[in-house]
Picture 1 (cartoon, rainbow, N blue to C red):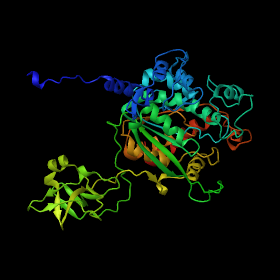
Picture 2 (cartoon, helix red, strand yellow; picture 1 turned 60 degrees about the vertical axis):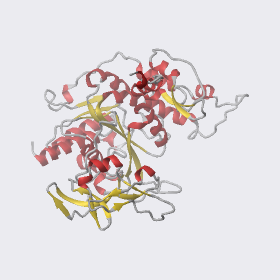
Picture 3 (tube, rainbow, N blue to C red; picture 1 turned 135 degrees about the horizontal axis):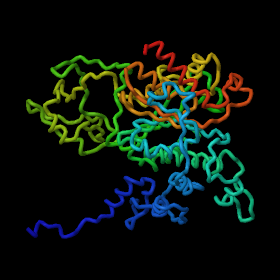
Picture 4 (tube, rainbow, N blue to C red; picture 1 turned 90 degrees about the vertical axis):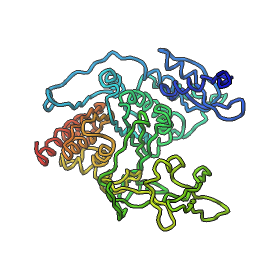
Length: 480
C-alpha cells in the first residue's frame, strides 16, 4: 500500500537529544534556530567534558549557566579516588546487627566511595548544606584558586589591571566558591537515588537562585517537584535591615518525575466537609468548572447531562471567557458515570482520604522552628552545643510523606544528626525499618564553645553522641 507510506522520514535528532538529556541533562541547553525561535541543542563542550578524563576547553554563545571552574567541578565529580572506609567498632552501638551508618570524612570522597555499593538504592536524601553567609568554607576541593587567580581568569579586571568589583559579597567568586562546593556533590548524590527517589535540600536567600539552576541542570528541570517554604522563626527575627526574614526554602527534586510518589499528609488539618457517601466511601463535591487565568479553548466545551441538558463552564463575562472544565473531553468520556449533575452545575466526587495533600507552606508549629531544633539538642545534652540545628520534626515530616517503612535515607551534611534522630523517631511511631547513612566532616568545634568545654572536639562527636542518646530516649519511650 504505497499510498499509505510516508514520503519523508522523521529526523532522529530530537530523539537523540532526548536520549542525551535523560543521561546528561546539564548538556542540553537552548539556542536560536534558523526560524529565530529557541530550540533545544546539545552543549557539545560539556558533553565532551562528561566523557573526558582531562579538562576540555571550548566556548560558544548560547543560553547556559556557568561560572569559573565549572568544568573542573564536573571533572572532580567524575574523577576516581584511592581511599577506603574503615569500621570503628569501639564507638558503635550493635555494630554487628545495625543497618545504619555514620561516616566521618569529606562527603565528596564518601559519595564516591558509596557509588558501587549504594548506587540506585537510596530512596530519600535530605541535606542542609552551608548557606553561603560569607564565611569561609571548610570544604576546600582541589580546584580552589586564589582571589588573584580568580580575578584574572574571570576577567574581573580592566585592561590596566584594575579590579572591577569592590564588594566581596556580591562578586562572582562569592558565589563561585559555593557552586564549586555543591555542584559535584549533587551530581554524585543523584546516582545513589532509586528510580523513584527524591532529594530535599534546605537553603536560604543567599543561594536559592543558584541552587535552583544547579538542580535543574543536574536533575533536569522536568524533575522539579516543589519548592517548600518553611517558617523557621516564630518571633523576633530582627537580623534584617528591611524585612524580618523568618523563612527558609526546601527544594524537592525527583530522580525521575514519572515514578515519584509524595504521600498524603496524614497529620494535616482537614476542613473539607464530606457530606455525601456511596459504596466507595464518603465524599465532597467539587465543581468541574473553574476560573482560569490561562484560558484554554480546548477545555471550554459542551457537556450533555443525563436528561439532555447542555452545560458549559460559567464565565463571569461572556465577552471575555476565563472559565474552563478541569477535565478534558477524553477524561469526561471515561469518567462520565462519576459526574454529579446538580443545581445547574457539574461536580466531581472528592473521596475522603487519610489526611490531605501535602502543602508547600510549612507554617505550623508541628514542623518545628530553629529554636525547637536547639531545644532538641538541649533536651538530650542539657547543654547548648550546636548553632541552628534543624528540628527533627521538620525532617520527620519529610520522611512521613516521601518514604516507606523499609526505605534507605541519606544525609551527607549530617551536622548534629537531626536526620538520624528523625528516622529513629518515625520508625518508633509507625513500626518502620527505615535505615540511614549519615556523613559529616570532622570539623573542629570552636574554641571556648560550650561543645568544646563539654569535651566534644568535633561536630562528629556531637552527632554520634546525639544518635546514641536519642536512640536510648526513643527506646525508653516506645519500648524495644
